[in-house]
Image 1 (tube, rainbow, N blue to C red):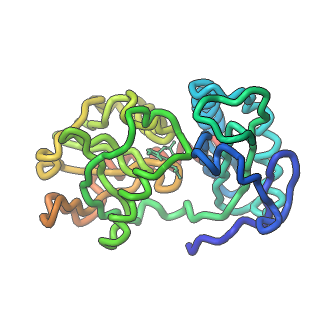
Image 2: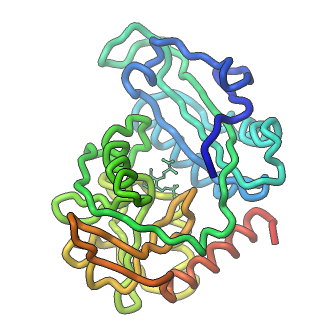
Image 3: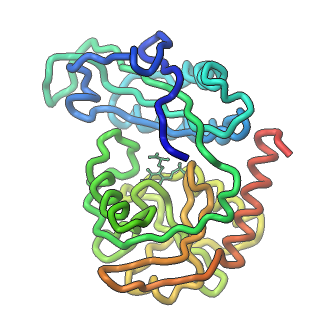
Length: 290
Ligand code: PDD
């Protein structure tokens, strides 16, 4: 689906058309990338895993010292869906909270009001099981606090643009030779019936979808080892899949490192398929959709 601007956005207390919403050039999000963001999926008008997303959001804000209570976002999420006419559509909610407007300093300014932006936009969530992702392995050049969902995404942007130029959807980022995650997704590997994913530490984002998938593995009695995989072992994997709010659970069918394709699969493997089915069922159960 081609990206377009949302119909309306909520900015600092008011709703307006996307081209009528303005922030100060002294907003620290604009000047310094000083803010936190979140993306929440909406299935046929019903938000999914809101609790997990808002908890991560609140944790991130607290970690960087932005005083904002995410509780006030709950009614705005539903309002955004309604105002954008997405009550029966698949969509995503984008939210960001910046430290606010102040003369530029590297240290925290005093007495600033956080800047809040929130909007809903349509995305395609249905049919993710049939999608296949090709990836390239690139260096993870991000900072050492990837657990914070910072709006400063320069390293992610540079990495993913490399993938885009090569005609593929995502990167497998490698730090010191070990795969951390994607530029905007989490990654799982399957070998001999065991699932491997990077441990939850400061080198990955604690993905909400990743957490859902790990809990589905527990339900299905599948073993998950939170252990980082060396790039040289990608070639011997049985299955690889990405997880995330937008990709949900998407099979990787090709991975290229340098000029060499190190992994290929014709289609999603059996464990990926089982988890995709379980994921659809979990969404249906939680959102009340059947
Ligand atoms: N990206 N890792 C990174 C670096 C991410 O940016 C994301 C999400 C994920 C998956 O997390 P979750 O399952 O909570 O969506 C992992 C969002 C969707 C984005 O930047 O648009």
